[in-house]
Length: 192
Ligand code: AMP
Image (cartoon, rainbow, N blue to C red):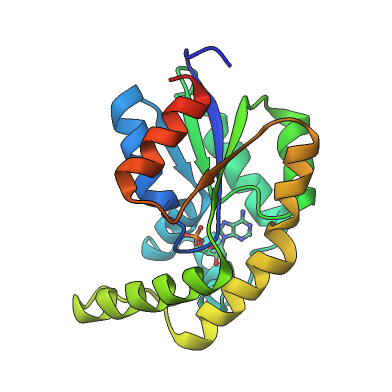
């Protein structure tokens, strides 16, 4: 991949450090950060019609239906402010979403933050506690919803790892390392 204007997908379970790594990369290389979770939360906060439709689904930790998420992503991508590079975070979450993405836009690489399932669970519960202590608990940060979100991840999203690997797009990074070491491995792997 050329170092210029990278178009990246970030893949990893909840608690894998996706958000943190995306932020660091975006700052360093002036990339757009497009997160479908953030787009959906914007609609919730602004009480839009779409926000009303997805509230319950999100609070339960389930995936929002494709017809809603495809429209939302297309609208965001059509803004074309990402021509100098972007990181897509939280999409795709299923192979059918991966197919939709591939039909519409070209991405250079998929960065996969690899961490064992037991580490994921520990991190996710710890983060939920920290957010609660700060009074910033999300609707979907209760234990039941977290469990559902993880089940959704392992049954529907993780198959994307081998799917992208087969296409030769995957960069696998050990996500159990420190934030700095993960960031360094990503940059090295991408030639940035
Ligand atoms: P996130 O912030 O990425 O963890 O997303 C929060 C919630 O938004 C998820 O638990 C889903 O309910 C919903 N969501 C975000 N991205 C997607 C997607 N690509 N497909 C379906 N649902 C999504």
